[in-house]
Image (cartoon, rainbow, N blue to C red; front, side, top):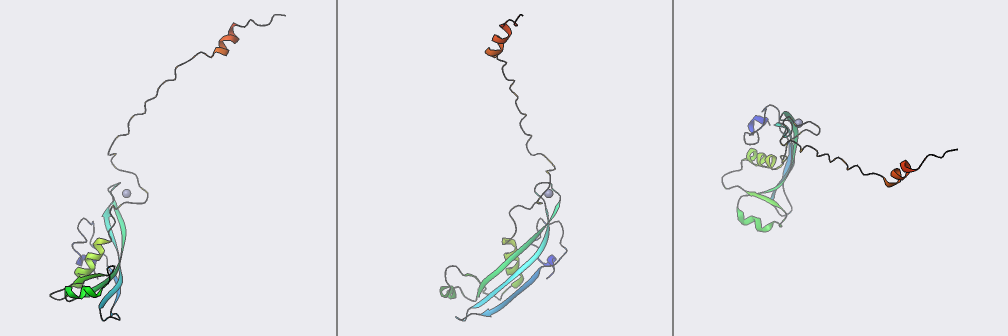
Length: 149
Ligand SMILES: [Zn+2]
């Protein structure tokens, strides 16, 4: 599916070219519950939060959700099974977009880059000059008269 179709996902993205790779299957499980599983893959061009340049961020979302025509069917699912309820037909792209948005990284940045703007100047290092203390042994040595022969 063209990435440009996912306008909510593209908020804040620098480019809308590319595709979302969708693979999945839709089955009824042993209980007769409609179950959608699959994976979504795309690459988004986002702003690196460190150097402020563009960074390509791979986004992968695993889809594992039951599609229910009525909230009442949710009782048949166990607590760790996700579901969506659709009352007026299912908007599959909308559902996929939600999954991709959930899979977005919290912070987009290159693995290795330098900050463009130093947000806070590091404190100048305070160098405390060590107090020169006379070494008592050196003092003794200087007092000691050279051996006269
Ligand atoms: Zn960067």
